[in-house]
Length: 327
Ligand code: SAM
Ligand code: SF4
Image (cartoon, rainbow, N blue to C red; front, side, top):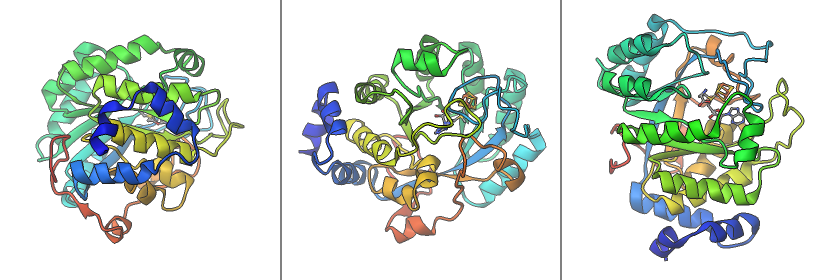
């Protein structure tokens, strides 16, 4: 039954499940598949939000360059390394370096930083947006292991509307470049964007499969008051959970985070996601002064405890948590 579902779900089936309110218990199925392929281990990723400076205009994001209410910051290499040391001491096995599209961090500076971090026995994930093939190649050669770049939506028209200065085709190219360079490549989408159709959500899941994504992060859209989408609907938890579960069913062995946006929208959202197919969580190790300024959406929750994970009967992985890792 499980394998049948994994191999056979097509665009049409996905649409039917996404539309239906009482289809089948996809959360239970996704949870069983997660258990079968990934075990009960949860991988912790230590998140450093090292710059909230961004040249882009993404309509949904509080960090978009037009938002002049944001107090902008950029951490120094020394500050970042302090967060890295804290993460290493805490036993975390992966650092995620995330920022806006901040070109101050050019290839030379980032490669120097990556090499410093690689002196520790820790995996590095970059989440810094679109760069050239040469830059991605240089980051990889310097020691970066993984890269997160959400496609956000595979609806080309919607993508164009929401990203005035960006190209859908370039984003796709970036993802295939990352794959070809040997990164563990993560993508994902936002669920609940205004004018987003069920068909396009099903298409998003098919895209994750076509790319053979190693990680997929799915977040409910949370409107930010200082963006053009301030008045949009904020009721996107259940749909995002459904897309998470379906992604697990379609790509049984990948890493899927219980995203911060899930917890921000609903108490225990992270555990609900972990019980519906997810197997990764992010712990924000950025200094408080800065993480409060990294406001992509309002009331962003940063959970730094793992007690709820243990109480839910899951174990904390001691491995670096690559796709192929069994524990
Ligand atoms: N700048 C990089 C990029 O865009 O890939 C990385 C940082 S960006 C803040 C990380 C993710 O935040 C984006 O990929 C987007 O999906 C998500 N995001 C931004 N605004 C959001 C919102 N209002 N609700 C939910 N997710 C949001
Ligand atoms: Fe910048 Fe990323 Fe936010 Fe877009 S989603 S405005 S690129 S930080």
